[in-house]
Image 1 (cartoon, helix red, strand yellow):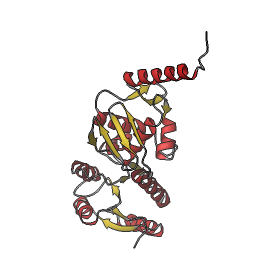
Image 2: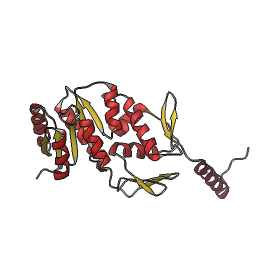
Image 3: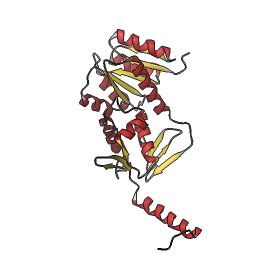
Image 4: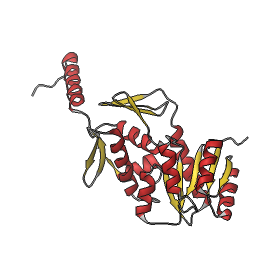
Length: 249
């Protein structure tokens, strides 16, 4: 049995599907191929793949609509879009619909496999009991769960990792290039617009008050709520008083 799980390849061009299958099989994945949208939706229900490589330009039902229906059904299986279209609008639409990554044809099968592995690493996360909270937003890295005021919200693997990275250093400003490198694992093959789209999706899901601050011309940071900032300052002052290490001015 394949060691890395089953990948659903949704591609109407058989030669491309077979090529992807060959490379994925070499890397230890099982592969199931679907040629159109309805077949893909049925295959997801029947096989429960660990990830989906999804062509956008499918007959009968477009790949974007397949992804939209999966997310509407609360199915957050990682999705890697493949398409011949290189228009930024198409990329933004795919990411807004809940795709985890996007690659344009012609592509190297090795790059597709590398991107897929990166998506799976993000979706599986790090096995740890660490929890982080800022304001009403809390995340558990072990279970990949995110809650807002105690209510769980659904995030894609990439959205979760982006939020976790920002929350790991509240108040620190990260450039888009830093986020691409640290969260996505690459910086040269996608545009910084990818970061903006995922930030917009996070803001929409987290709701008000807006936890993510935009620093114009620089990047993004997690904004500490006023109460947390005051508490942090008070704790720091108390520590100085207790230890007697304050400096007289």
